[in-house]
Length: 160
Image 1: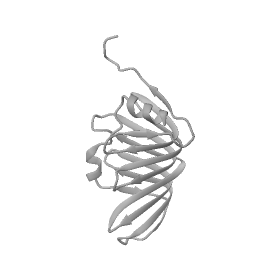
Image 2: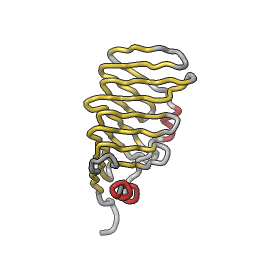
Image 3: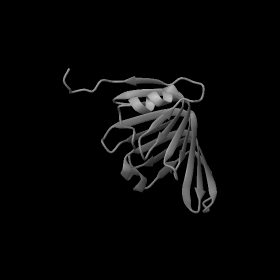
């Protein structure tokens, strides 16, 4: 609990996603697909899965894309590792990797589990479970019995 509070209070770098990405078309590629294109269906993609949407770039061994009422509701990515790259509105790159990445569209929350590493120019975050709120940029880690590790880089260009 202390590590989660410390993380929320001390993380000095933005983690928010580029707001225009959500309005860009989503392009998906994979070696194989088992898909239903109905309004309430799952599509399973496997082998060299690549998903791009604006600045968002995702890589995985397997992706399950869930649709409800014709809209994508959730994407579950697995890999060794699954990867996620995105640029924030301020131009800061963010690279993340984990064994599993679950993106729930309705809440704009990404949950990364299994050997999670999130890297940004101002610092890195590692843990077994990290919750990333795309709308607010808040990162919430730990609480699963494992420790969270952070490296915070000094601000450049300022007075010493």
